Image 1 (tube, rainbow, N blue to C red):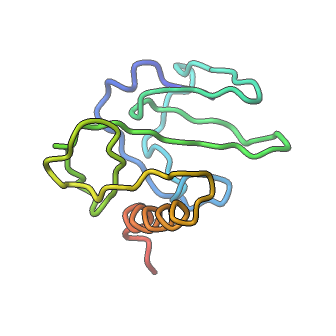
Image 2 (image 1 turned 135 degrees about the vertical axis):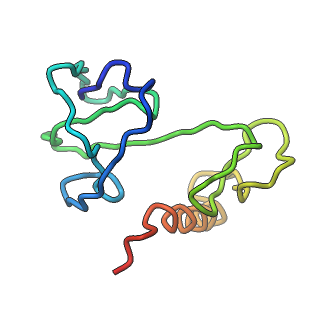
Image 3 (image 1 turned 180 degrees about the vertical axis):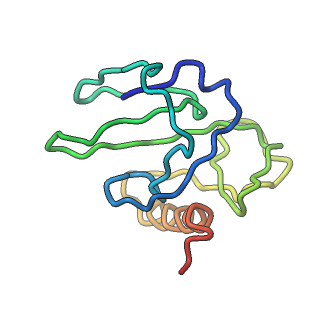
Length: 138
């Protein structure tokens, strides 16, 4: 993986949708402006390792040449007073109380593969997909 040092302090970078099948991101997003690859820091990850980095860090990786899949996960913690500017979204309250109601609250699973948890996942995923794919109709 390569990262641009200090990019988490930059203004939000414009992205473009490529819809490339080889890009694992929802819409095949990539940074719109050309990055100076000579300034990138390379992070070598071994199988089973992961990176943790600020969401604003400009980062990329080459194609997955392993026999197993590559997995990405994003975890975002925010205070209940925060609002989504993207549309209806959900959140799992992990601490305190939500006195604002800006997000549809998710229900924690009680067991692995619990039918109620699977239904909740489907509900939350539908909300998220509506936001992620907005503007992609047609």
